[in-house]
Image (tube, rainbow, N blue to C red):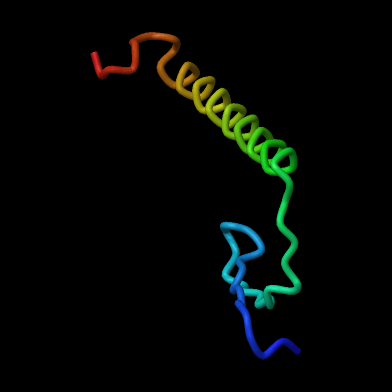
Length: 70
């Protein structure tokens, strides 16, 4: 066990209450390409959620209105 260095407390995902602990020798940094790929996946997921919410809004309003409350 490393007596010096950093220790990290990590949530497995943003909705988790579980905390996992790692020392700095257990952490591997991602490449720029890996980070970009993960960000792109997150963007696509959020775009799908926005599209689904827009479809729900159209269903609720019957396609009327422009979303500004008028």
